[in-house]
Image (tube, rainbow, N blue to C red; front, top):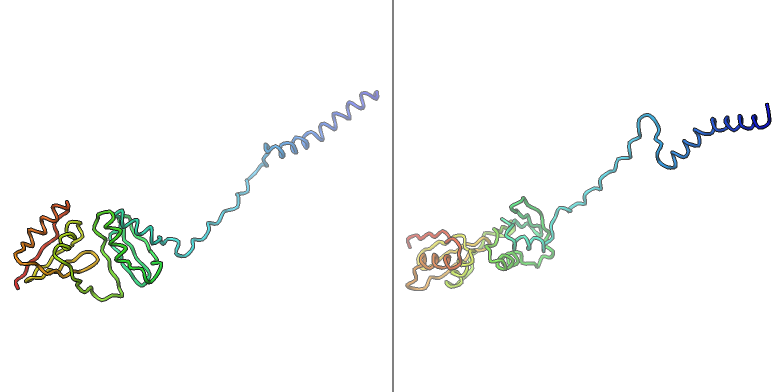
Length: 198
C-alpha cells in the first residue's frame, strides 16, 4: 500500500469517527439538535402574591365614579367606605378623619347634575332634620336629589339620599303643584309626596 493510499484511508477513518461528533456539536451550537426522549418542562413561574388592600380604590377615583353615576350607595365605617356600584363594589380608605364624605359625595354628584348615591354611616345616630328654605327645597327637587316629601301642617320633611331636611311652608303655597312643576323644569320624576292630617 502506498503512502498516499494510507493517508486517504486514515482521512476516511477520521471523518467517520469525528464527523457525527462535529455535526452534533454544530447542531447544539446552532440550536437545531434536540435530544431524543421526553423533554424537561420549563420551571413553573409562581404568581406574585397580591398585596393586602390592593383591591381598594383611591378616594379620588371613588368621587369620579360618583360623578359618572356609577355609585349606587356608600356605607361608611370609621375611615373605610364600602361602595356598591352597577358592576359590583369596592373598598375605599378616606384619606383623613377631617374629610367630609357626605359633602364630597354631594358636590361630585352636583357637578354632573345627578342625584347623589345613598349614604349610610354606622357610627352616626339617625339623621336629625336640618333646616331648609322652601325655594332651596324646590331646587333640590329640580336637580333630582329629593327622595320623598312628607307634609304635615305647615312643615315638610324632605329626604334625600344623604340628608333629611325640615322645611317651613309659606302661606298659600300649593306644595304638590310646586314640587311637580320643579321636577318638570328639571326634567326629573317628581318625588313621592305624602300629606297627613294636622
